[in-house]
Structures are given as C-alpha cells and as structure tokens.
Length: 269
Image 1 (cartoon, rainbow, N blue to C red):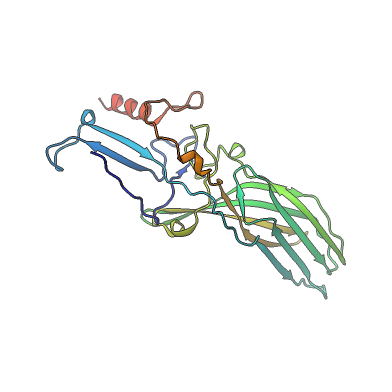
Image 2 (cartoon, rainbow, N blue to C red; image 1 turned 135 degrees about the vertical axis):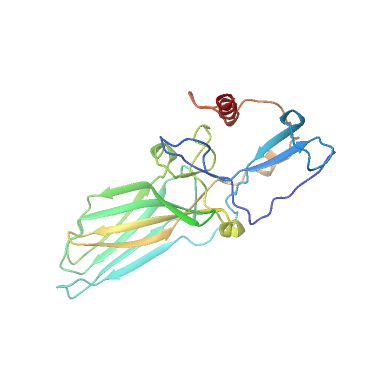
C-alpha cells in the first residue's frame, strides 16, 4: 500500500549529543522512525516479526542565497589612559561548509598607553535542548591563542584561519553531531536555520569569539558563524531509489544500535 508522509518544517534536525567515556545507555538526540506493521487493530501489541522500521534523518543544506559576512566591533576605555582601544573582527563570508577554514580578520586601533599581549580566537558550538526544561550546552570546538603584540599608540590588522573539526573534539561530552560517533561520515552538527531554529526539541548555533588580551583584562567581540553542508546537485536525486539490505560501515570496535539492543535483551533474560 503506497503512502507518503511529510515532516513538519518546524521540527528539529537529526542530531546526537556525544556521550562521555563513562556514559551508558542510548545517547540523547533527535531521531525520526517510520514503522510499518501488520495487525488486526491499532490497540494490538506490535510484534517485531510482524513489523519493519526505517530510521530517517532530517538534514538542512546551505541556502543558495547568502547574506552579508558578519562583523563585530567594540571600543574600551581604560583607567589611567586618555584614549580608548578599538577592536574590530570580521569573517570573509556568512556560511562555511564542514572542513572549510574560517578566515577571521582582526583590526586593532590601540590609542591607549597599554600593550596588547595576545590575540585569542575561539569557535563555540551552542546547543539548545528542550526536554523537561531548557538546557544549553556550550562547547569550544576550536581555539587559537596567538602571541601577537600591539604596541601602545599603534594599529594592527591581520587575518587568521581556524578550522573546527570533530577529529579534535572526540572526547567532549555533550557535543552535538550530525550523526553518531561510531559512523565514519559523522561531523560536527550543522547550524540550525529557518523554522527549525525555533524547534521545540533542539537547535544548534555557532559563534566566534575574538579577544585582545591585556595583562589586567581582556577586550572581546562575538560573531555568529554558520556551519553547514552544501546542497547536493539535483542530478543526485533524479536516479531511481533502490532499497536493499546493507550493513553500514562502522568504526573498528564500535557496535551498532541493533547490536546494543540485542545484547541488552540477552542480559535481561
């Protein structure tokens, strides 16, 4: 019996929160399951031998039209200094694809009598999870600390590149992933955009922090960063869809969901 179903646009995208080394049980995340079964009525108990299930993932691709590149600036006045420090940071585009370097241009106009000792750039992943209450997970996925000095009464301008990757964050508990850590095609979760950004169960955002460090205090700005996958060519969807039994490639030593479920059932019995 052919049928069709449509996923609401305001539902969250499929993500998984990376468990910690000592965590047990199923990881927290968003999954969608389509189940087909044979029964006399809807109240009848569904047996595994009379049903099939298909796990699907909702994903978002980068839009064709992009907006202006983010920019942020701030001015700080210090005690014992007549003039302020002006810090400006900007990106070279609005949307980045997974694995692309993020170019951050830093401009400093230091009219104070103090010396800037370091420049710090970090990329944070911010995940909003709504279950019984609103939980917010903020994880630094990339950080650079550059020993760059800016003398008093001088200007500075330079572009730095940072690349947030899952390979450098595999041990961080609560990190949002597009898939699961055991799958080789997994990467950091893409930024949630559009109607799904206000979803009831979760949203993933990103930001870049740029800081000029002084001996006594720091001056910093924040900018949003969007990390997504490019939209595939339409030709990839023109071919006939073939459904077949297959075993998804897994990392050595990792178990799939079905393996974990079968082991749990054996332990209970």
